[in-house]
Length: 525
Image (cartoon, rainbow, N blue to C red; front, side, top):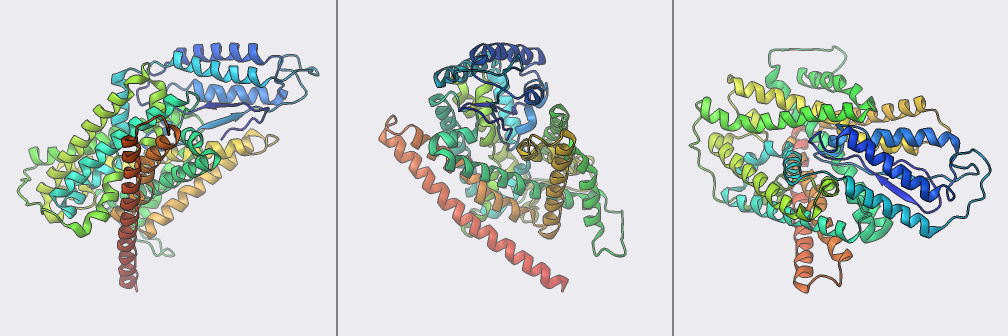
């Protein structure tokens, strides 16, 4: 979080999650900034005093967050991100003249400033319906697509109803987030909604889950990187005499070290440019599976089991992770020119994504049957060109994610550091902490190389709360007394359903993970 502490005013400036670079344009951002600044200056010229050494810092942050033409992906996939909470610091120096100030502070005027900012933001929103749909679809299609064929094969074709049902539920909870934002125009993010519903405790809880999901998702990405590097560089052998590591582990370390400098980036445009490459990789992976059937000669003639009930708790986490994206839906909502159409955006987007996931799950399960891997790319014939493209796309995708996913934490850390600390020292601390986190993620991924279980655990432990439990709880708390009893019952039922699914899924995936680790330890011994 960025902190300027002052007399009871908090301005929320966020890193946007949009994928389409034209929303908003650099010129529109600049115009919005100028109009906002005029109103703020006019309203608080005789109210607030700022330290001179804060003025440059504030302008840099506003420029960084509002002017980046490609900053839109910084909270994408994920993922996953945090607001920049800007608290103003009062002092004994006037805003413009650097003279002692005798200002009379007025809470009413401060509130009017906040309202003016909210109005200005709505005026500046330019996102169309089509842009919102494209952004939401691009945000939802990610790591989860690799495991849907595996989940369907393990759960049976009847489990596809769970996949579809979760898609419907997540579309509904996306709609609920829009309703929560309607109730409080000042709310601009998932954490704001949590704070509006349950106060500071709600915000802390939501923030904890956000960072936990980011961390666990990056571990899953790194495991995927390791697994797909093996067939990509199958003929390459690397040995380090003093390190008891396999060639694939050493190659994974090299790949992560290549991506390591990206976590030092402070320019949001550079980070989002890298992220856009990750979106392209996800689309290539998605297209590669049907191409295997069309051009590779692989026949979809395997029989899918009807139902394997004992596997349902474990695969439910894989299914729910595929729909993880609610953290950034409020940002999409706020960028829409007509927010009243957000519900339709959710319905269209989740319908398309659910249809694609279901088709991919059935096609992958029919193509490879019981031999289908937890990552569909590892089941494709290695000699095919389309397989090589898919494998390389899967390898490169994690390398494009590290800077993007770690950015919210790094930004919050940097701006929580003492104001007296120099900008270069702040950058060094931020980069070192980001590097440490990335190396910790690498160590965990190499120690727990079980993609399906880690991904399932992430879905059951974290994603189910963010996608189902929290939105229903937020809406019920915020709109209590204004919604019908059937709707309250529906929300509470979904909270109970999500909690049960999360508990059983977490227990099941944890047991499978522990069993796999024990077998691995016994084998190494």
